[in-house]
Amino acid sequence: MGNSKTSLTASLVISDFKEITKMRLALSVVFSSIAGYLLGVDTVNFKTLILLAFGGYFMVGASNAFNQIIEKDLDALMSRTKNRPIPSGRMSVTTAFIIASIFTLLGIIILYSINKQTAMFGAISIFLYACVYTPLKTKTPLAVFVGAIPGAIPFMLGWVAATDHFGIEPGTLFALQFFWQFPHFWAIGWFLFKDYEKAGFFMLPTGKQDRGTAVQTIMYTIWTILVSIIPVFGFTGKLQLSIVSAVIVFGLGLWMLYYSVRLFKLMTEKAARQLMLVSVSYISLVQIVYVIDKFIR
Image (tube, rainbow, N blue to C red):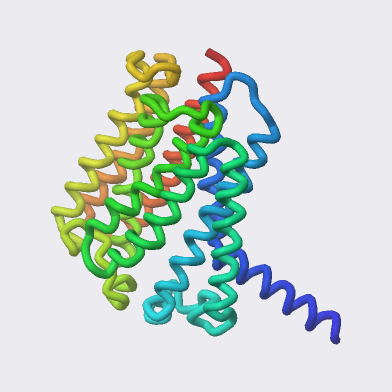
């Protein structure tokens, strides 16, 4: 009996740790960073790759933990978040703060061991997410614009980790993930509108589930598609894309655009949820195509 109770407690602790750091989101960010690294590197250094993965995870985990500390009272109001470790009372603010602080230090130290620029961008990401984006969510829809900056850093961060250089190549990777954030987050803001409303979060550009929001979602999807194929024209230095891969990337963009237009037509939460799911698949597939293209070109 004692053993089963201990294992249950351990399971809960692990579950809460995964939730306070948002493990699934953090792993998707690590995936983006690794993709960026593979695009930028000439010869893969597995030590650097492992450092980038752990450093990236710690930085995202820290951002998410700080976010949940700041929003603990608001999280308690929403169905989606009321069972998180802090609002549910399973984890104290002090414990969460210790985790966030340790993760911040470890993240910066590990990324600094790769190069200074990688650590700097990682630190900027945490600062913007926790200190600017999180407080703005209850003030203005522009919070999504601010949140898109740390959200777009990981893809770029991988290139900087590989090259110790920030230029047109990582800038393009940043722009791609930056524009992608808008249809992705507005889709989430749409189907969780009622839940967000309980906490007073302004996630949609017009503040409503209306045509204006749907039109802007389409526009930013188009911007994402345009940025995604820029490397095929040879303007982006070492970041290049073959015509075949550009056609595939463009096709993936049209797939996402179809669901953006569908949201405009149907104006339903189901259509928004479908767009969100497609957007997640889209960004991962585009990154995979970019990486495969580099190594087979």
